[in-house]
Length: 307
Image (tube, rainbow, N blue to C red; front, side, top):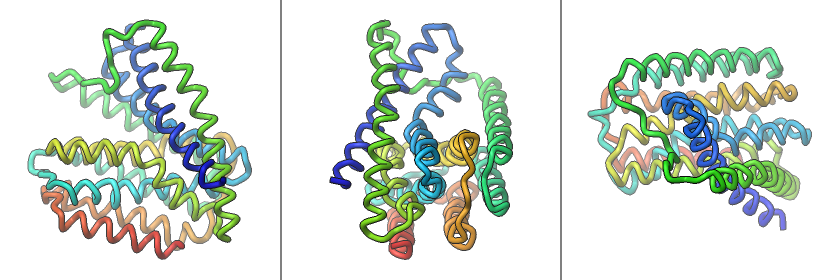
């Protein structure tokens, strides 16, 4: 039953998150919000809504380790799994990509987050610092895109969508997200207890992989379409929002103690995974099947070491 609860919660989260994005995007565009702002804020936050709800609900349910594990595990999975699996299917050519600025911001966010974790507990002060970093990142992104002549494409935008459909998408998203997060956390907590695992380990593995599935699906499609810039941008953007946005908001809800395991192992694995992207970003190394085997293999070893 606990596996069913976790699976049902994950499925509801994925569909509810997608529904919320569609509804919020089209509502904002109908109200005259510029497409640039919609793309950089509503879409970004909406696609991270499942992770955010899980982190907040975990803290409210008294299992903050699951919240921290979810974010750290998701960032590790985003690099090793979300880039590794698509590379097994098709080579992604990075010679025409230019994500250096975003990548450096992701590294800065990662270092800032690790430094805050070494304070022992992530509290509301940590949250405000992380949200300030998110604000700086969004401001830089808005200024950069404004200098570009190309108009941004907004994910989920549908000019033909009527008000009843917009409202339906919003309602389904707003109702589904808390239900899905509650079911997933309940199932994951029971699984952890049955196997004698900590809530942190479950967050680093089961929950992290589950919440990374939307990013994996997007990157697989980008690989098949030979869109390396979309694949790299998806991973970089998701990792920044996980660290700055999700943990920034979650720590305003309640403190998150940082277990010694994170300080001695998991945070450094997350940083190491981020540094593996240097050849892809700065030396335009193609993401070949060899890369795919190496990245997915490294993730398998990491999960094995946890379990």
